Image 1 (cartoon, rainbow, N blue to C red):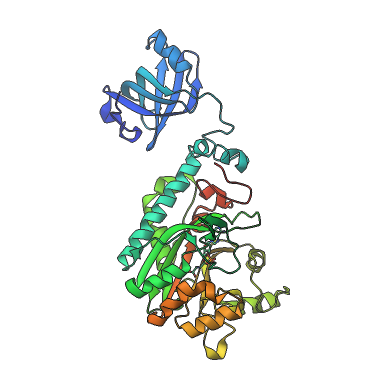
Image 2 (image 1 turned 30 degrees about the vertical axis):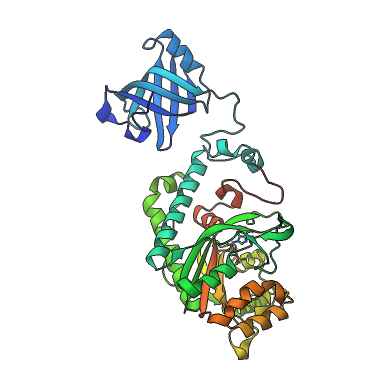
Length: 433
Ligand code: AMO
């Protein structure tokens, strides 16, 4: 048997014609002498209606024994039917069961509301058959596709950098050590140093790949393995990069609106009409506002999601930048605001409500400045020799950002738990499936 039509191709033009559909059983309604079976394929659903009087005894029994999730092919006659969900149904003539479901899934496929995420994650491939998640991952697909399109149109080339590395790049974030033959190595926390180096030859580069962070805490916004959209550009500074990033976000959100109408409708989401430029608040300005609100925070402290939430009265529906952070809480490669103002650096976080979506900065491009900062942050300069040596050969001024794909999806789909927007999430408690 070969598939002749996808569910989306079954329409009233095919009335009285035969078709072979393939997919899995997403719902069964048993009305005694009538069985309603929904077959789902990658494009949607089609209703199959078996009537005892119109089928052979054997076929009717076979259909009656079907279970949700079984993988099947049905040859049948297409009938226009106004009462059917998409105006047509299929009257079965032959059923082939490729694989019968042996168990009942511990969650309801058609339901929008979900049961405990751990139960679902333990059976993730089956969980992903839910329309809710399929909608999210189709939106993810658009986000990835349009990001690539946007960056390529803006003269960036896509690169891949090593994920097994010798040194930390992101200070505070903990590393996963691995065995590398007879040495210790680490999983890359970010492609930071490599993307910077690549601006020497290519000027504009981007990478979409995994980053690994040994996050010790259990939160709804941290993964041990996340996907980062990393961008680096030569001969620009952080202001140019913020302009690029906000344009990219708008391009992505608009493309999703255009491409994923069905998914957005299913998820009951109305994406905002975003306007340029996104608001910018300096770190110092936010700290002053926090002082006015009687929050206990010192200039130089990091801003926790909770403190930002409090400041916004829990408003969580807008993108904005927090700029000019204290140098002491940003990584060693970030350029300061200038000799007079070494305390602050040319850096930004892109926020959505209290969720950090991206961070970026102008980078240090002079070797002496970089050495000074590394020493100040207590780093072992010798371990970075492989990186520092390229600074003897004319590293251009450059700037860039890292954007967490899952964080962006949380913002777009309004999911509170990062695990829902990750196919197979990794966290402190989870290494399977
Ligand atoms: P940073 O460490 O801020 O910056 O990371 C950049 C973005 O990556 C996402 N992210 C995460 N997402 C899920 N789980 C995690 N554990 C996690 N950690 C980070 C966030 C964050 O904003 N090299 C710099 C970027 C740059 O300056 O180019 C960096 O890695 O969305």
